[in-house]
Image (cartoon, rainbow over all chains, first blue to last red; front, side, top):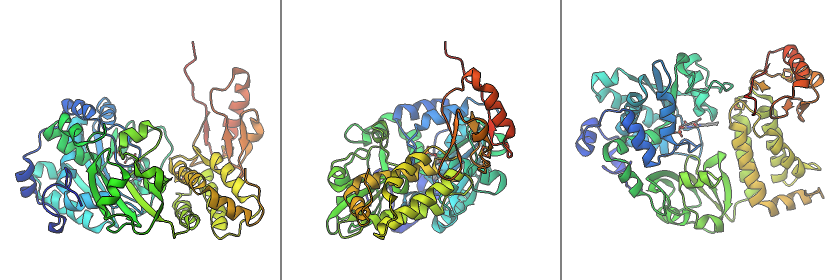
Length: 401
Length: 66
Ligand SMILES: Cc1cc2nc3c(=O)[nH]c(=O)nc-3n(C[C@H](O)[C@H](O)[C@H](O)COP(=O)(O)O)c2cc1C
Ligand code: SF4
Ligand code: SF4
């Protein structure tokens, strides 16, 4: 693990940093205000929960609304390949709480919910203990709310719905949470890593944050490296680092890499050759139409069957549909079934063209972006593993479009 | 035309009443043509909205282009 900014300080083995140590190391946090929103915009910080949306813009849109706002710190982390939010919350709970407090002050919120995946035991424990160490005035504003362990529970309207009604299923938009969220109040839903970065930017300024990046990127980024590497785990690297540099930090590739899954189940496959020199810059990748998603970097070994791995991910995503919207529920089920048949080399006639057609048909037709993420993943598999898919379809003489 | 996907139960009435802009996907759920609805078709659109048994559809005003 490298320790650049968020994870600087005591070694991971030391566990959660106490409030006393945190304050001694970093100094007291400033008060959050509109000036901080400007600073965060200048810093170029973008969200780390998946969509890479500019954090300052989001804070401003909540701050401009009337009526006491609410902040939800999103640590649901339902993505199976991601560990970075759990790790951050477990080791640096006070950075996350600082960020949530600063956000609340900047947007005019009185209530803070620390929404943490209930399966992430050490994160729930660290944040609960950390809150108890804070001054009463701060502790009174926030509480820890365990999130159900489903994939969609971390989607922002699902988080709001869970607070309001106890059901962690997405709701139709509009209204978006920043317009009408918890109890009808404007609500800022922000990933815990995004908030932790804000806590350091508030202390050290936007120029400091920008100076941490390389190759024109700003800040640092938490990544979860998994798959065929020697030392899987969470690393913090300078934004703009290349995939090769990150894999070297993880002890290098075991065997030969065929492809890299970037961004997790909602991300996409890229060939190992393309991935090598790719710069991991959340803002830059978004501008280029790609996405770093939630920072998952997973290496697929050449010995593994890419169709089988992709089919299992599609099954997971189909099972995790909240089953509210027909095109998502039935569409993902059909896509997953056809992918599974192809992976088993026993496709029905026309399965491959159907995958292409259904993917286009499902996109954009759910209340939330769950189906869009699943389709983006599948389309990347269809393109990167085209020869394998074609061969699997050819096993039955199916037509390839 | 706006649809609440969490409500729609594939009753398919809308596609029958407003075929100019609504077709069905392979699972019987409506695919709604994007963009504003021409004025001449508004009565059809309104009829589809009114007939949806689960009130999943709504018409939203869009800013008229200059
Ligand atoms: C199906 C689905 C699941 C999501 N799960 C999470 C999650 O576990 N944690 C998270 O921070 N964001 C998650 N998101 C993204 C949130 O909707 C939201 O964009 C994010 O929390 C905003 O914070 P950010 O701008 O700091 O990234 C998910 C989105 C979708 C569509
Ligand atoms: S799109 Fe899928 S996951 Fe999202 S609300 Fe609808 S059914 Fe649930
Ligand atoms: S009539 Fe309503 S429920 Fe039926 S398909 Fe159309 S929108 Fe869905």
